[in-house]
Length: 476
Image (cartoon, rainbow, N blue to C red; front, side, top):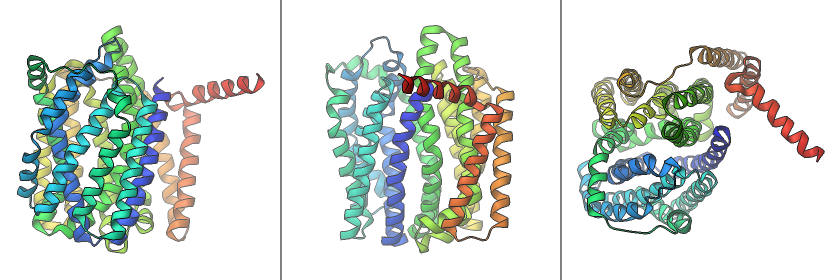
């Protein structure tokens, strides 16, 4: 079930990433760095504000809707969404405060509301294990964001208008799946229940809001210390890395987190630990080779994907950010499950706030000294600190299993792959597109071979079982 759910989520996110890649290719060629900077700053603020608006609703969705015991809290979530929307004017004021002008600020506040509506719906679908519907909704949203963004860029090279197109895309996607997400929900306004949900969700809301802020704080510091154009150049490289590398991890966690909640609720702590033991190996087997491989070939990726004005900055920052993503994924897609299962909501806040403080101080100092590349080093330092502090906190929450023997096999396979890819890059003298084709093929082939030989994440037995199912189906 874990592999099946992950495969569906991964397929959806790969298609979404493909549309995102189209956006990067088009936007970094048609928009000046300053206007692209306006767009990424507005989108970053919208992500922060939408997290602040609706995270208090995500907690009961993850804990109650995901139990699989017939509990349906959608009827109380809908009034909560409407109440959250009342705070939209605060978003406009906040966007002005961070330095956006009036039009981008209004567009960013509207985008935050649209993201809140769509993402809350996806959380409901994930909690109910409707992975195929999540896939359809993710693809539709990605296609609409890309199509409307490209259409707008052909008419006007305005960052504010690009924010508006994204808002419309999110709203249209939410409308298309309105019935599948909310159909049959008995809507009810329960003041006492909503207040209880809000109080329980305060630590997680503050934590995830700070997490969202931590993810984009470096670009706001760059915009403050340098300008929006520099923030746009930096963000193009960083977002390309994160969009490419976090997708597999999010796909896996979207599958195994609801399962972990169900197993812990129905079968107990030890069964949940056994499930998570397998999940960590699976997660690292996906994450580690992708991140290190990306870091090795990042210069070729930047030259192929990004516009000329964005490449030099991206080539400097992308390898550093690729390594930082490893620690980010291990923290937020694995260790934070401990806080969810133990209901230690305050630990989210402690871990995220301390990591944000490190990121803010270190990034500010390094950006002043080294420019945009200092932000990448600051991000790496903050993610490493966040990982170590989260690991320490799990000792007082739900102790997370660490299967050292399994993880050692993953490390061996990854380093063999990295050595092969780096050696080929040094020996061959190919154009960027040809280099990517050769190096990616060699890296994938090497890693898959190592996975088979070492039976990483039970790959040998799972592939054998899959081939047996196919053979029996053909025989019938």
